[in-house]
Length: 291
Length: 241
Image (tube, rainbow over all chains, first blue to last red):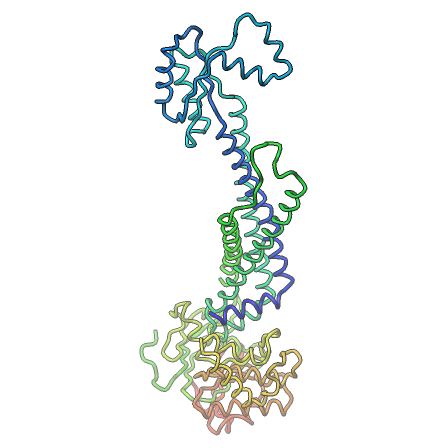
């Protein structure tokens, strides 16, 4: 095995140019794919953070007696996915509105009657913050006879989820395309190396070398190329990430989340994938070449 | 189908044909080569000498007929076992076939590395064989900077380093001056005396005269056909197959 490693490293050094081309190709592809991964990790963080703030407002019909309020509260809290339901009386709602309107609050002074309805502010459990579950819960709330209207930001919740899913899909497609492109390029680069060394391979076979003896160093080369390409790509991404994060406020305009680099698990996963790509490229070209 | 192998035969060819499309390179060759024999295959260029050697080490496969090496039928040998078969041979090519990017040491060592020998053994054996062929001084040189004679000696070293049972040499002195040719032939003779079977393909009558032992066989090929077998000292048609 040590012999194979030595031969692989010697081969890489002997064919520096072709190997450098392969490593750079892998590095660029890894950079692009992991930039997508970084984007998704952070968007996902923002989504999770934002979803924590999701609440459903259930407005009550006018004239519901106070003694019924606690019954309604029990009913709502008994519903699947509800973490907490807080009653907000119309007086409290008006106070809040005044607070939010600040200087313009004087406009509300002239009101003869409080036009706001009583309401329940409902918070969801962490596992029930998807669009579908929220929609289902809203429908159930609407079916209660005391509830007049339910509001949860349907439109933009739907839009945001759709955009995120579309981006996710694009990311997968891009990842898949880059994977195929890198495998193709690596296998062709290895094929070039093999062609430049076909005489050597022929001689090795004539002196009794097994296919394993011939292939093993190439596989190791592929793994090394993949690992180096992956590491270089991720270092480039990290440098870019640091540059960007230093040049923009850490606390983004979203206001509730900070951007972060790829977690170690994803980092290791990308390097392993990159090594697999290098190996697969070798495997495909050797399979064809040694037929 | 060959039923019984002659006990002293290490190579048997039985009604062997080799075609390259419409061109017939070998036609109905039947030939037995005994263990420890020193045999010449003689013929002009294009007679089929190289093709015949290629069939022996499975550089090519027969179109028809059978070849047996040490009792192994080459038509039935699994692909996996071909490297093991080739380790029975030491092959010397007319164009040396040395790896230009590897040192003299590495070129010779590759045979033992392919056999899975230990590093210490390889070091010792390669140095010893290179000493035998007088090339120990050029251990770290690359083949392209060596003369033709030196390269051929490296090729001989590579052929004998694995202690093969059979040496196949294709025009081993074709590109060499007389002195270098003598050295290479002397090395082959020395290896033959240690028990190896040597098969040399050549067009050179003088080489046969100088090298063959009294009574040694010379097989004559012409246009792919085995014409006759002579003994070296008589040059007469004293035996046919």
